[in-house]
Length: 221
Image (cartoon, rainbow, N blue to C red; front, side, top):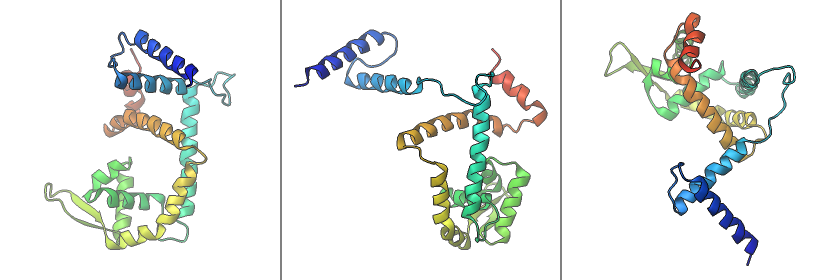
């Protein structure tokens, strides 16, 4: 019998009881497992700070995050561009719009544009191109006659399916050499950022006021 393991477990239980005065974990096995999971998750995020270019000169972590997100977007676009070479698609937005229609079904034009985080003029150009190519069909909305509901056509499904192998390969390459656990951690962080930014984007605040309003709403005590 591994007595050292038993002693380690007992010490963990003692630590759980001492730290669980105000944390709200149930005083049972389920509560202990939740406490242990959260404790290990915090440990994962409290690793030594990484180095980055310009750190010693005072470059902020926020600056690094912003720059790396821009870089990742450009890398992803490069792979997407390669995925649609010698295909009928003009841009990566063409197949992204079709993928959304295939996954989520028919929707209004504005619903599709908002789902893809784009402004109306750009989104309408993409949708009009899809209609011209016969990849989507449009009909009057049953709830709002001023709106058009669009859905992917059989031709759109065929064009998308013909290119999906390369598209999946591009998305796999974008993830690089991250392990499964690193991918899950990255998804959690990106979801958290998306949860912060999406409501702000949905307000369509004028560019002249955007920084000031967001700063006042979220960062000024």
